[in-house]
Length: 109
Image (cartoon, rainbow, N blue to C red; front, side, top):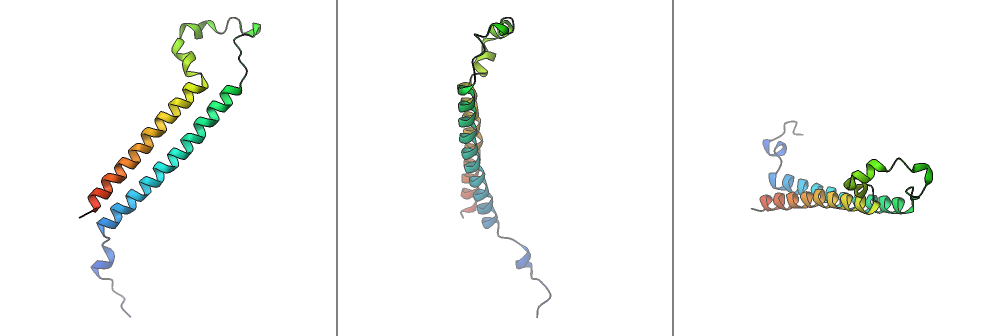
């Protein structure tokens, strides 16, 4: 029975470590794509169903500041919010896939 470990047992293979990190990045990117699509869909569906308060007489004075800030009104639209979520998700997932590809390229001898 050998109670002593050799140096080969303690040193991990850098190629397999890079491939493991690349695999984790691909999984993370895939999770981001899935969650981003679900979140964007939920935001759009929930926002499209909400009642439009612009015609309500009790809201007469509350929309004046929003009219001065056109971009803020656009950001409150469910389609715009869903597009922002999709864009950010695509950026994060694309970054994960890109860095995974770089790790795979470094792992190949």
